Length: 209
Image 1: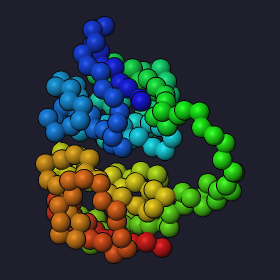
Image 2: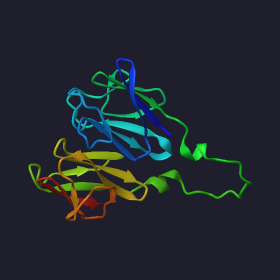
Image 3: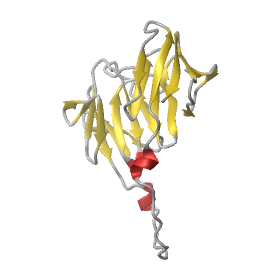
Image 4: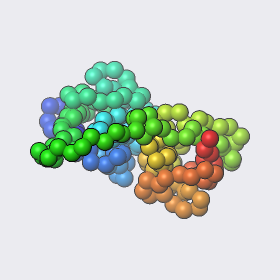
């Protein structure tokens, strides 16, 4: 399992296993990884556990930025040994062994089964969000990335992840929980065509196709 080792001035502060699909990092107490330092934004970055154990770090428009191996990073896939720097904190990423491989045992051979092409398994319909109410009313945003982050840091931030079975929305951080069709979202939720999303005072519609 992938792991982070957080240190400051050469002293290890904590170690965290990345077992969730989404792990948030920041100064606010509701983050999964809390670093209580003024150089760290309230919602600073998010680590996304993708298919086959791949981990990506995304900066959430932080004040002081997120650095990977000395380079400013907005969205960066991580590899074993990468060094993440946030303020004076250094975070070492260790890939570990994928759970499926770690748990594998010898098994009798089974007849080969022809699997559908990978593209057919992971392709989801094109989607977009249309802003109905709020400062950007009338605008649309295409969800072309694997993970799209929406909202205003410190108020309400969500991520919309493109998966094999569709698009899933999850709360990343903020003081106000997002709503989908009037219901608060505190865990990952699969979106459907024409769902209504509320982020604080912004109201938008999720559209497929």
